[in-house]
Length: 147
Image (cartoon, rainbow, N blue to C red; front, side, top):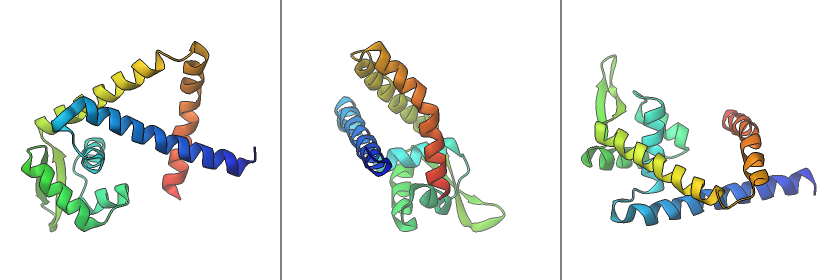
């Protein structure tokens, strides 16, 4: 295989993995399932409390008005706090509520369980390969995000 075909295969595989995890999580969560966009927004705020709506839009590669709508929905659901920046009243800073932190923790636990159960059905060598490649995938992600 040429490097390009590896790149396409990696991209397709990661995308399929993400979609499969989303579907499995939605099945497990039932009616309480949040959209992937809302989960990604909550995760971004959890990683960087105090982030602005504009900054979240940049991180998620989404339009600011789309993020603003999601923020409104999540605030209304009691998962997100919106506060005006005291240094610039036009900027809204975001933070997770206690329910938001619990929701994200539950989401991460659910993903961990789904992946652990699936990985348990793999050969030990496959599990070791996945563990070994994770640091390289993190570095690849950082390079792509900086591009």
